[in-house]
Image 1 (tube, rainbow, N blue to C red):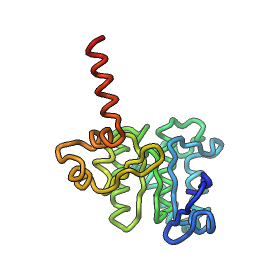
Image 2 (image 1 turned 45 degrees about the vertical axis):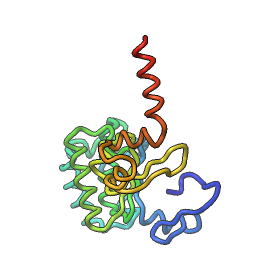
Image 3 (image 1 turned 30 degrees about the vertical axis):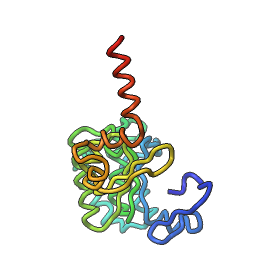
Length: 206
């Protein structure tokens, strides 16, 4: 996403090099960080409108969509309050609303459902699935593997900064053991199942 300078190699998004053409790359990407640090002196509505203006979204379309999304995420009564009064979950929902209006081609989402109430988490999943059906790409990072198993078409497992496995859940099961859950496969590939076995053995003798 252009936040960390690479030590080597390169990254391209839709053909644009993230470092050689940063404005082109950022124009078609959207980012939801795990820690939603956004402008606290703006209201939720002002922040979303600011993002819409920055990405040159038609103001009439942006305002109409903004009203719909604030209502969907049950933030309509809080939309004109300062963000400094928002909870962690409310801030995340505000950024999600801004991303939906921005309409990037590629989304990068860090723990997108953490801090959300169950209804909003389901709504976010449904909206993201619809975006994928429309041709967008969503990269999601999460430590909650049952969410990854339910939401993602393909899974990449990263261990010690290396991509050690990638594929659909079915492909990962076929390669590593058909009866294992995604969590079991992750633990097996990262060696954590051995550590867990040692811990359980120690606990059984406690």
